[in-house]
Amino acid sequence: MHGQTFWFDTGATTHTGNVRTVNEDDYFVARNRGGWMVAAVADGMGGHDAGDLASHAIVDHIQSIGIPTSAPDLRARFEDRVNRANEKIRDMSRDRNGATIGSTVAALLTYERQYACIWSGDSRVYLIRSGAITQVSRDHTEVQNLLDQGIISAEEAKTWPRRNVITQAIGVTSPAPLDIAQGIVERDDVFVICSDGLTGHVADEEIRDIAVGNSPQAACEGLVDLTLLRGALDNVTVVVVRCVPVEEPASVLS
Image (cartoon, rainbow, N blue to C red):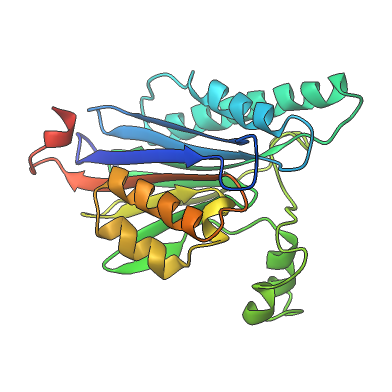
């Protein structure tokens, strides 16, 4: 596919929440008129040593991604930066006598009309298309494993006592464990990338309604505000990306 097909209207916000004193979340958004973009959310492992340093390490490395020449090049650049961050975090752990340090990551990469969602942990990527919301990523958690094996039901999963135990994260093993889902961007697609501080309080249908009913930045702020109203037991970070055909007025970019 050649030439720019979409530009990307984006919004992003993060909040410490109502309980935590340190925000261990971080995010990154980069886009250009050449038809590519990167949006990522990282959530440092709460309760562990230096979780905020881990998430910041991921974002710091992604910031050096440079200018890709193709969709495979963009993916390779992203995976390289995450693997560099993975080794940096592992070095931090060794410097702290083996303390458990890590971070989730969830990202959306686009190049022309191709997209890839890449993740590790329980931060999520959603796609809203034709009025329906789909979770593109799949949680790397103990409770998801139990669901997959049929040991517990979806209803039981909502109140499972260890529902936040993650089974995969950046900084824990080498190389960095990453899953990927790929597809083609369509007109008016909306992607939502978020930490579990959002999904612990806000249902998928509510995410859909707020994301499609507002501009991306207003949607991010609305989703965080709703999380705060419901207790915000964790840090919360949201990035919203709307895919807009280039023939439409690009007022946001002016």
